Image (cartoon, rainbow, N blue to C red; front, side, top):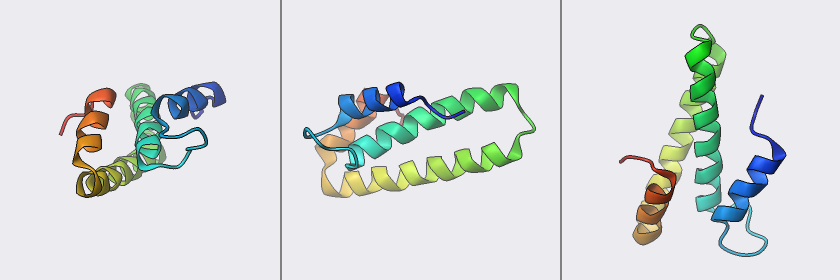
Length: 89
């Protein structure tokens, strides 16, 4: 099961830049981080779930690309989002 609608809207509300912002780089990174954390917990209990593991790896790579883009375009925002999401670099 993926993250709930309530959790997703809460994450969007915490990271949006404007009133109607749902697709900015920061929001996408925050949502991917939430899904990555959920899948990581799932895989601790379901070690042989190879399909979910592949999806997790794809999400991590997508987040990595988004973070690299944010670093190129706005380094201050990049540092801020790393700190807020507790992502190590």
